[in-house]
Length: 167
Image 1 (cartoon, rainbow, N blue to C red):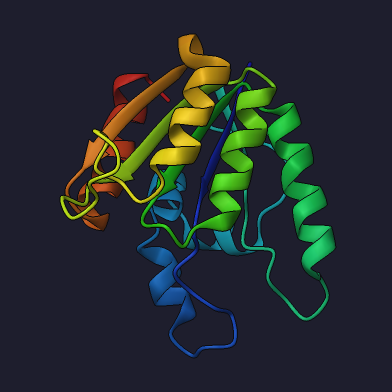
Image 2 (cartoon, one colour):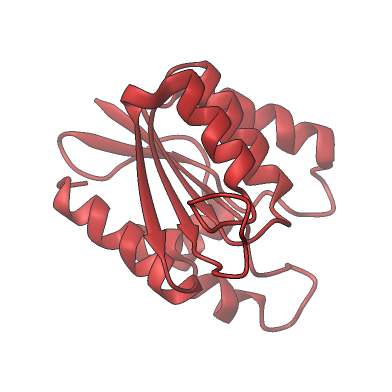
């Protein structure tokens, strides 16, 4: 069974009153079909006969601290067989670290980034061009790159790609 890990910044904080609504708009909650699974889930969730979702989940709480979150998510990446990463801008150190780690493990990867025409250092037109290129140099045959025009488009691209793969 394929094990899916879907990385990217969470746009909600459990300390804000509207966090459940914001979490429900996250591509992982949409994909899982239930915001509560994203917010309170753990372990492996069977999606169909071929794929299971292994994380990440929203671990942010008063009980779980930074070191535990990193350790848990690195273990999930080690266990995964397909990793999806959404890179929004240059301020995404968590997903970038996860992406590079997955690349060094030669995982099957889908990297979706938001194009920024103001970025002139790379033909990718993305503030995260350096780690993307680095991952390609390590693991090119296992990486699919998808460009998006904005955050909503990026989330739709991920959902459409996973649907095409029968996930």
